Amino acid sequence: MLDAMKVGILTGGGDCPGLNAVIRAAVKTGIARHGFEMLGIEDAFHGLVDLGYQSPHGNRWLTEMDVRGIQTRGGTILGTSNRGDPFHYVVKSESGKEIETDISDRVLENMHRIGLDAIISIGGDGSMRIAQRFFEKGMPIVGVPKTIDNDLGATDQTFGFDTAVCIATEAIDRLSDTAASHDRVMLVEVMGRDAGWIALHAGLAGGADAILIPEIPYRIDAIAKMIAQRSAAKQKYSIIVVSEGAKPLGGDRSIGETRAGAMPRLMGAGSRVAEGLRELVSADIRVTVLGHIQRGGPPSSFDRNLATRYGRAAADLVATKQFGRMVALRDGQIVTLPIADAIAKPKLVDPKSEMVETARALGTFFGDEP
Image (cartoon, rainbow, N blue to C red; front, top):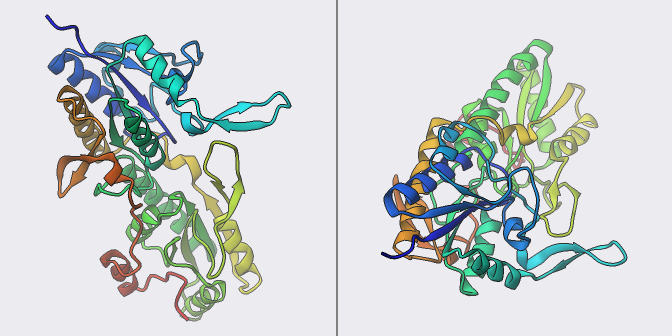
């Protein structure tokens, strides 16, 4: 009888509602359907960079009991990291300065030392790029698309996005009540990085008066004019949804800090708009930054089901040794495709898309009109 395949599973990048549902489905399918032994790898690739790496999670062999009921929980039982790229791993020099170095060969050596036959990597665009590079180096790996930003190409939707939109929409609903009570201009900053999907979906669902997204640069004077026109029409309050990657015409994103081995942290887009408006309008302006509230808490039923379907499909990919591929959602069905195709082009909002045109038809302002 052949030895059971030993399969490692890890989560990389930012946390996201639905990660645990993927882990649960992959582990249960892998063990019950394919006879795998499943190793939970801690904190993205950190657990393979250093086999003695310590964290509250810890590399551990998973059983079906270990994943029982975890689909209802946010976060990830395996831990995650957005600074764990083995091809650009951050170490400290003798002088104490952080530098990046390529330690991918060590990851492959440790994988073989443990006896792993394959890896299931759950992550967004950055994690899938790491997975593709490892596949090119010979690692048997499959991918599962994850990000609340919904910006990963080749899949109609990533899990986590629906939950983030629901949270943002509820926040808009609540802020609309208090804005109406005080005749205020409320700015709601949401996540999304360079893609405006969360802002667009939540803004449309919440009836926002303006939606500012990275794909449509805004003009602060045009936004001020919109507020003045609403006030003149006896509409005393306004709700403006600002994507964290929104930028003024001719300007760039609002970047808070840059750390070695990590993407630049976007910060301050809402405050930037507020500061510009305070010089042009007399209305009381308040800014609410939802931030990581959008990442936590129980995933929506849609995200639980999508993540579960992804996890099962990923385990099946490993069983059939279809490595270098990623699972995806296409026209309601789970399909697979090369990871290289999935990362070829980011999925951004088309300024002329049906959703944008629908919002415009309802009077939603995008900051670009004269």
